[in-house]
Length: 277
Image 1 (cartoon, rainbow, N blue to C red):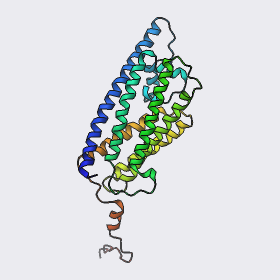
Image 2: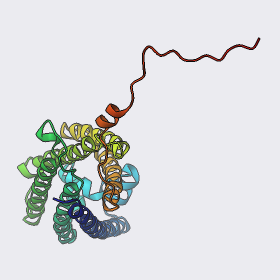
Image 3: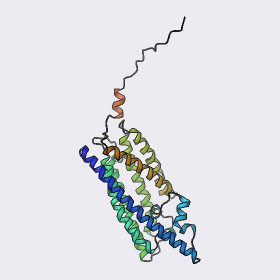
Image 4: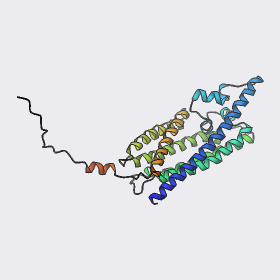
């Protein structure tokens, strides 16, 4: 793949990412508005409206714990039912369909950020491999959410079902794989002088996100941190894509730069200024 093709792919992936992200945000806002209004109506007629059933209060409490992250990593059947009442399920399905475009977009972005001839030692340092595996896990997660919504439509009890038990596990694995893909980007960037600083920041975000995903996989709460690391990593990847579109090439490797740097002569003595008089 030529450099011009990679630049065009980076530009196209950014456009698709913006479109998908905007649609996902609009759908989530529609769900948020409905749930907030529904909770307000319940309160007015004396219905039960706890903190966990009011997503607006939930977001105020958890900050970055958005609705999508809550549905992907549910803590209980009650939380799922509070997030996805009957009227919101078409919106959730619409969100999942837009998410497939988002998945395609970030795979294209990762491919555009790969440098030709970049050496790797393991398959988990292969950027394209990590991106494809993460995308497959993301699609499996979406399929599981579809099944969860289908079970809600049928009035099934979700507690102790494979779908409810498996969804947070699948989601945590997906997030781990996404951050491993970001780590693969950082490993590649750190090999080049021009890209090294960006690579260091990406590695820090990917490391924090990976450990949070592992802790979440073990059952510990980590949704807000996952959201934060995703936002930071996303911003850094956008910067990288902009550099790629702007024509910034890999350039000199750190190894070559160190090799070209002249070594100090161990036998040379510094010239000290003579004392007056």
